[in-house]
Length: 132
Image 1 (tube, helix red, strand yellow):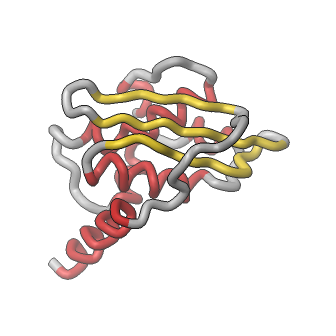
Image 2: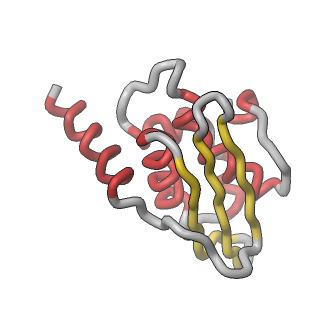
């Protein structure tokens, strides 16, 4: 149980003290998406140089899981090539969250990944099945 508590604290820390929160002036890539069922919304802005993410910011609102997930994801992808984001799978982000995510919260946890993939692929939206 102690390990679980550590991960819960990790999630709460990212929610209360989000990393890379905000927007970028003149981003190279931007995408946004939301979950109409719960009201979560995420926007991500990217600065890219030579195919590498040199800066990333997220904004929006939502539940603890969606906002912490966005914060964690930005830390995972900052400084990485765009191809790294293209290759990320839902299990990669879920593992980084470190806590079991039930079916009702899965869309919350994966919203930031959908937005990041939409940005790097230049799409309006990414389907859930594209995160497999």
